[in-house]
Length: 193
Image (tube, helix red, strand yellow):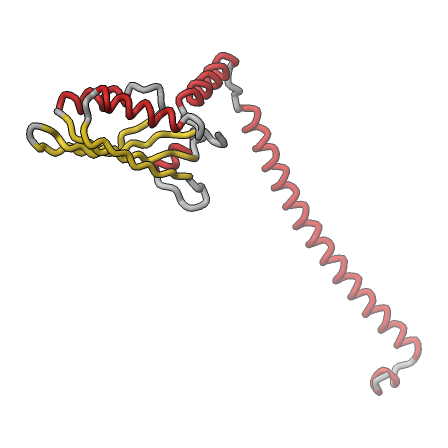
C-alpha cells in the first residue's frame, strides 16, 4: 500500500474502499442507463422502419390474373421469335434464299456473336435487352449489289421474317445501274439455346 493509505486507520480505509466502490457502481449505472437509452432509440427506429415497410407492402397491388396471363403470352411470343444456336443456320439459309430471289449480286454475310455481361457496364441499348431477358445477339453485316427496287424488296422481306431483329445501319451508295449496300443487323438469341 502507498504511504498515504497506510497512515489511514482501518476504518478509514474501509470507508475509502466503499466510496471508491460506490463511485464505480455509479459510473457503471450511468453507462448502463446511457447504453439502454441508445438501444431503446435504435429499437424504436427499427420498429418505425418495419412499420413503414409493412405499410408499403400492404399498399402494393398485385397484378390481376388477366395481366399476368398477358405477360406470360408476351414472354412466350418473344421466345418464339428469338433464334437459338440450332436455328441460326436456318436463318442464314433464309437470308441466302431471299438474296437469290431478289437477284442480289456479291452477297456476303459476316456474323459476330455478342454476349452482354451485366457486370461490365453495358450500353443503354444493351441494358434494354437485359431488361427483357436477352443476353445474346448476333451482329450480321450484309453487303451486296442490286437494283434499287431489288435491294428495297430484300430489306423489306428480311424485316418481315418471323425473327427478332433490328436494322442498326443501312448504307446505300449509288453505283449505276446498281446500289452498293452495307446493312448491319442485330438478331436476338434465346438464352441457353
